Length: 207
Image (cartoon, rainbow, N blue to C red; front, side, top):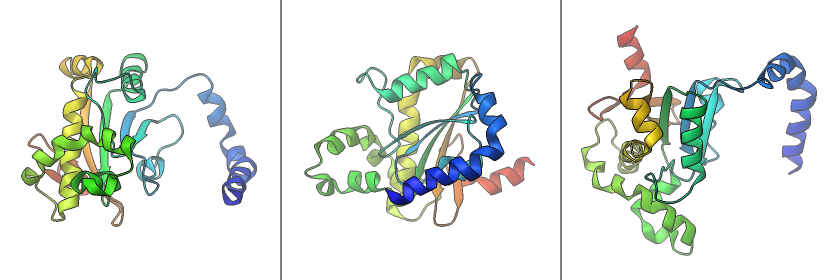
């Protein structure tokens, strides 16, 4: 913990003073641009990846970036989704999986989660990925195809949430599927046909 505490003190003494006005302005409220649903994996840093400042991202993080279908149980994910869309008016939601995901590895090899009953129960919401991973294009590694298939499965689960379904139907909300290759620093995005392509190539086409 000593390293963590030193980091906090460095933030307080060196970083915060340069951004004092920004943090003061955030006291009046927030208007995030994106609800990002991503993994709890320590190798993923949403703000670093997107180069955003405090107040720009609304974030849900959990093992495997999973979203339970609406009504499965009362969850923090459901509450955050509803609040973000209906109270904050967020217009974009992205589900972001990543390479070398331990949750997806456990989904593929259930024996690795034996003795972790909460993990086993939670991974039930990722099982639809196993049924569609062979349809995924754009990735060679089997685990990464599972990661990508899970992103699409969680987008389906998102659409069962009334706040998402209503906002998407009215044109006020756009859903995005991402896979983050953290070793190469690349993001792959899904298109309407559920194919994944590198974000930089997509942006060149629309520029």
